[in-house]
Image 1 (tube, rainbow, N blue to C red):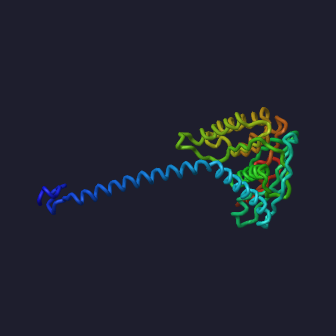
Image 2 (cartoon, rainbow, N blue to C red):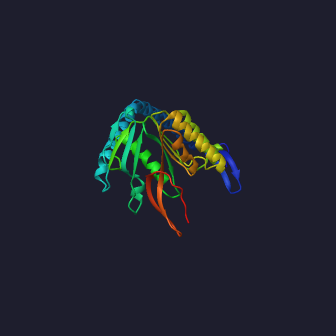
Image 3 (cartoon, rainbow, N blue to C red):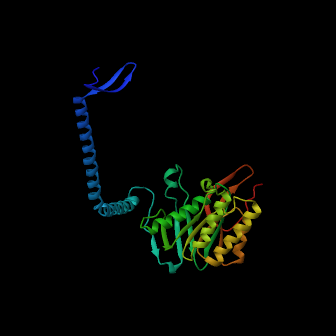
Amino acid sequence: IDENKFNIFEALKDGIHFVDSKMKEYSDELCSFQKEYKNVQSQFVKDMINVACEYVKLFQLFGNIIGLLDVIISFSFLPCSTSRKFVRPQLLNSEHGLIYIRNGRHPCMEMSCDLPFISNDLELDKKNNYFSIITGPNMGGKSTYLRQCALIILMSQIGSFVPCESAKISLVDKIITRVGASDYQLKGLSTFMAEMVDACSILRSATSESFVIVDELGRGTSTYDGFGLGWSIAEYIATEIKCFTLFATHFHEITELESIHSGIKNYQVYTQSDKEELIMCYKVISGYKPLLIC
């Protein structure tokens, strides 16, 4: 190879890479075009972004309007698209201090259950019964009852029809829940600590116009400690905060609060039993009766 005519890039076993002046000219021209193309492309993208930024607020507003219309249409379509009864709740000012739900149902559970859903009532008022203690066996329907009551109150306050026969609901400022028995491993919280964090949140943020559901508080620790915490927290909510509360528990001793403080009423999940089996009726009734299986 005449090195006066060609520039050698590298020499390998299988050949030599080289370029002449004409190829170098074409290569430089190609690199120049590519650089110019990238600069034009980059400027074009920047111009597009600048133009689009001027319409971001408009697009956000448009998206909110479409979302609101979708929700409103869904609310109106809900009672017409199902054979199950949905009614328009009667909303009351918080001063009325009344929550009355007749034959309420869980809107999600009844859709996924093949069997007829057992409906239940809820009656709470600030004068006589604003704190309900609910007892009963596992799998008896306590958690479902708590969740359905909270969902019905939430649906009523966002403008939806609700799954029940009739409802009169005073406005609440918060719906606070302590349900489940999961831990937060990523945060380093055990099941018991997670319960205490949620309970602390209830005691700090709940007001007299809130709605609180608590499901088996104290299950993450020993029976003695769990009972003490459950009693103390239930008593504080009932006597100091005085908000609408559904308190499900397996510590039957807590039912004695009904005879100590006013505004507390005991309820139980009705069951039938004999020598061989326990029959769940999934019906919440007034009163307390220890479960005895002979």
